[in-house]
Image 1 (cartoon, chains in turn brown, purple):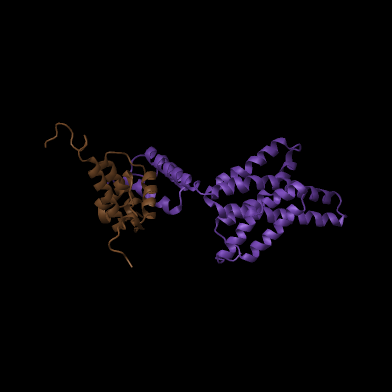
Image 2 (image 1 turned 90 degrees about the vertical axis):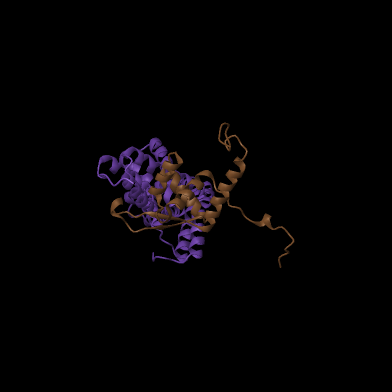
Length: 123
Length: 231
């Protein structure tokens, strides 16, 4: 029987993602049904302004899948890829919550800091 | 996304060769990604090698590659080098004195024990850590090369040292194919393998008994998991 007066928050396991994991979750969420390795890499490199190796991408995807933050499946082979299949990625509800928590933490901690509002920025 | 642009050049062949380091499923995914984006052969090669390196590093966080290479392949090859010389020596004596019946028994029993022991050790290496077979091979080859350098004989006699490699490599090959031993076969192998240290001197007895752990590991896994293939 739960005691409703007590605070059980200490029993809640928070899954905090890292910066690169957040980028992958964001890229997958952005691409939706079309999320797979090569497309996510292009989004991360274009929008994130950083290089992204396939090694880093796939080892991080495996970690995210082990944590239950994404689900992956193999697609049908396509001619564009020389008859090879894609590893399609879908962000789970747990993954979306973890990414949102990370984003909110970054916004909260950046408030009132020099990079949150740089000198000369419009009020 | 750029379309596929000629993936039959030397650069692409290098990438495909390097992708052999990956598992078949991951190879298909990665080669497909590279074919689709076409970022150049060098970048593709770095991508594939980088992923393979990350996968290998991840494997070495487990106890399995350490146990297979340093805990089994290296010490077992030292033990089996001695048994190879003993077995081939018995056969050589039999060829010189073919009328001595005890030499027939001695040669056959030593060869049989050598084959069982080497196959069991190789099989355990293949089962315990199939994807780091190269490290186990290095662990096995190091004492072999050292002995070959110091071996007083020359020519054909040097092969006496390496007889154990044939059943050992056969065992590794079967282990990597995910063959499951039945409990009966595993117990039979480890029982036969126990006879080898018993027939050695005191030092060899202790050393050989310490090296029986893969046999008991195979027995334990055979009991826990049902046989998936007939052996």
